[in-house]
Image (cartoon, rainbow, N blue to C red; front, side, top):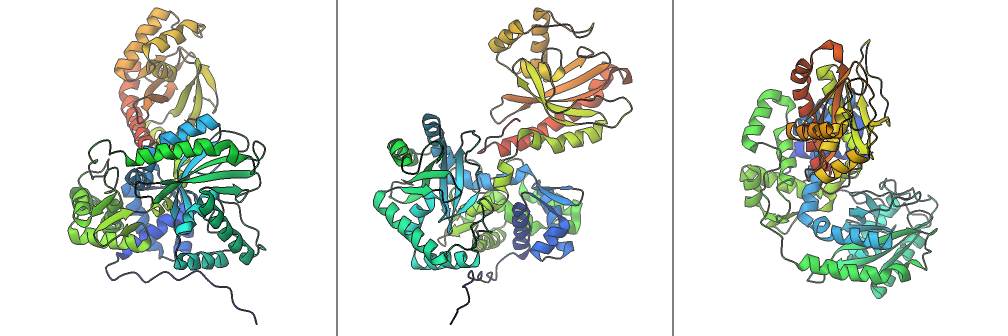
Length: 564
């Protein structure tokens, strides 16, 4: 007699206090994240089962919050959505306290190192220090792996209850290829479930005895890893520290001997870091960048009417009440931090706890790593040019001239993003184009952002060839110009790179205030005077740079944002 395969357990019914619009809004965000941050509105209607009018109102609200933008018929996750995941990471304190130690270990071993936490019957990454190689770790912060496919899972499963093991077996039976875990390659459909379960249980037992866990190509061929638990002062495992390599460098048999001594030293240092007192007072609860909630909510509702779903906005902003120094909060503190009535905050918290984004002991609430499923993995992998692109598009629509972004590469600038405009006479430059830094507006902004000694050294070694009759090549004059650019916060270059070409540029700063790129608008010198160009273009250019910096501050809090 054959028996039907077990199915995943049904989700419990929502409590009476649950906020329906918040649940529906989160379902849209989850589906958007499942589509790598981009889904057509029609797809969202189909995958969520919601009415088109409901999805439209949800997206309108998310756009007002800055979490989503629309491009044609598509909804696109915006970098500001990362503030939800940032709230969890800040509240956990794991990246802030342990991340630097993981980075140091990666540098010493020249291997990829990660920190992961348990998330249900999965493992979710909260920090990555990767090595750039042809064959290297490609997981991102927020990615979720099945517990059985990786080294950390065997460490976390050691504390599972009988009910946890039943849920894990049900999930394995319902999803034999791991389709619900898009971060990993699919599992062969003909894998023997009983053998897989027995193998995982054996690895859990072995990890318990050894105090560490081995991944011998469980994720994909060639990838091997060793993980060690990181415990707090009470002896509870709070995360796992893993070193990941490739069999072309070290075999599964060789990797433990090669890395375990340094892993254990780092774990001891991490235990000390966890036990150390907090570095300062708790940060204020109001989410950065939002006006006081009551006023902001009223203004949004008045402007958008039924297209702004207040209960959805309130629920999402409740997540941002948590953060550094605010890992566990009572209802009163959440209400104060968000400016919401206690009853409103309570319903939002109950809903979020029901959906798994919060856990509570009845008095205190704490974020769970499941918050990272709301688009964090995709958005944390964005590059600086990708962050800048929509803002450059908006800039070009406003000024009707081409806009670009460049970074400093040696003594040259390299174009990394560009949005052209359509004119009979336009500036034709492609991505990757390089120009000398000294006669260009973006180059001068980038040079002006360097420390004075480095700036002088670069100018001294640069061959300053006159490209037009207007090109400034005298080092003393260039030095004075760069000092003025630094003071003014912009550069205007008139026909020094090419006759008839005028450009204005402003800097883009990262979270630390360092100039990491420049944005410019290029136009034909015959269209207006330099003063007219400055008056017409500079305000819009500065607003675009400010918007890029705002996204970069959120995106770069816990992720490394590549400039290329």
